[in-house]
Amino acid sequence: MKDINEFFSSINEPEHRERLEELFDWTMKTYPQFSVVIKWNQPMFTDHGTFIIAYSTSKKHLSIAPETVTISTFKEDIEKSGYQHTDNIIKITWEQPIDYSLLKKIIDFNVQEKIDYTKFWRE
View (cartoon, rainbow, N blue to C red):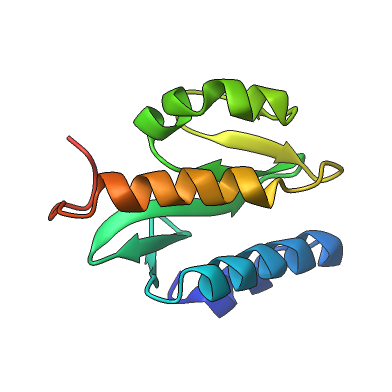
């Protein structure tokens, strides 16, 4: 995968693609300093070269990957929003609304925590 357009075109369900496009638009409008890079066949948002968050899709849900420390920090809020999660991803079914206020808290946490970080991933 070379770019974000290739990612979007790989999503077969029009409603899912539209939802992801809205999520990406929201992210870029809210965080215009972010760059989008493609790694492991999925787009990732970075800030000053360090990973902040990634979005991907599956048949049953969209996945949000903010790193394990962030999921553990916001575990209660994630569960209160009705989302399932693993140590690595938050699963939002296609029927569930996106809790943008929670997503903003998660992203703001990563931006602040990694403000002086120089590596892509946390160690």
